[in-house]
Length: 202
Image (cartoon, rainbow, N blue to C red; front, top):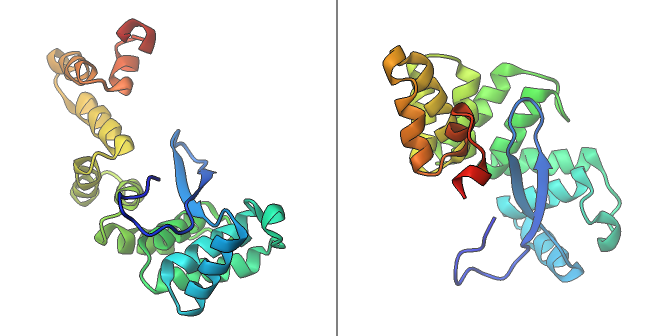
């Protein structure tokens, strides 16, 4: 995740979570990288800053850089802070909590609660949440609208899924045209549908 130009210089370490369950994409989040950043985020969390609470929750739950920062991993504490951040309205925490309920990681597996948190984050514009909410809702018009919303933000997983849906639902004469047009624009999923490799494109 890149910082916006001119953004406040706070915790910006890249935290990588590979989410299992079919998605080949990796979600990157920020966590404190230095003791100074950790102290700053703790002070902000004490003032109920949802982003700070979420980043501390990730740090304690997933133990990223915990040893270097002198932090003892604590999944229960980490989960408590992620929940608190989600309740305070952090779309990043809401999406993260939704994935936990979806896969039963940290929270009991619960489709209804996963959808609840995905929906809250999706309404705040989280493209990841819009994409995963679409997947959780199934094959219906509401799910398609959320998928299109994520794709409109340039969210590549949603763009790829929309292409696959359109190819599957198109008449036989269009099933090559659609991926060819997408591949011409650089879509690698389209290239795989056409049996092309990135080397061929280069």
